[in-house]
Image: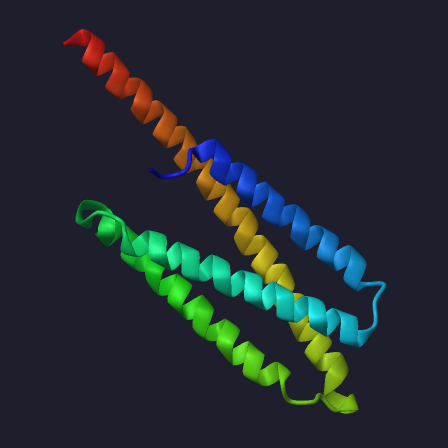
Length: 143
């Protein structure tokens, strides 16, 4: 059985807090420690993406069409993550380091903005689900 919406929102909150804590800690750490955290975060993101992929694959055909766009987005995100791993393995020279840091901060800001938009969409979906359940119960009582 799928998780309750409240459980999913709680999971989302935990992940957001973990990202916030990672940033706070990373700002005080050495490059090696940050790269170690990055590898762990990459492994976590990969595991989460694979979990979502498995869930999407198990979705009924009646809703599969709605998930195709999300599935394509997840696949694209996974490809981007793999490409980022390859890029990270190359040593950055001093001239590009500042520019790369700016780009990465911009990417992180964009990812946060995307997450916020996703949360707002999730909130709307939760309200739609609750309203749908209420309508279903009212219809059942009326018949």
